[in-house]
Every structure is written in structure tokens, then in C-alpha cells.
Length: 65
Image (cartoon, rainbow, N blue to C red; front, top):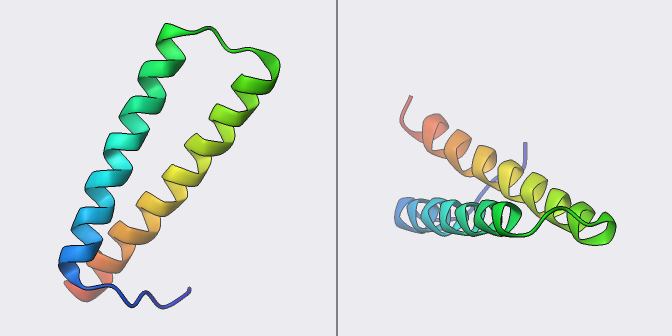
């Protein structure tokens, strides 16, 4: 796994921002039905945010296990 050089505070802030972006993405999904191109774009964004969230939380778990 790639080493993260972020402070704990930066990790927590990144998790909070990630959660906000994910929530906004979900709101847009509910407001507008998936269209071929837009739906694919949202799916890519969703997957990216999920991966980032997993990396950030795994790093915190690794530091404080």
C-alpha cells in the first residue's frame, strides 16, 4: 500500500470532505435520473470517493491499531 504523508488532522479533514462530496453525489443521483454519460461519470466519481475513503480510514486504523 502507498504510504500517506498526511497528518492525522489532514486525514480527518479529507474524510470529512470525502463524506460531504459523496453525500452531494448521492443527492444529485436522487434528483436526476441516471443518463448514459452522466450516470457513468457519477459512478466513476462514486468509486473514486469510496477508494479514497478506504485509504484514509485504513491509514488511521494502521496508525492506531
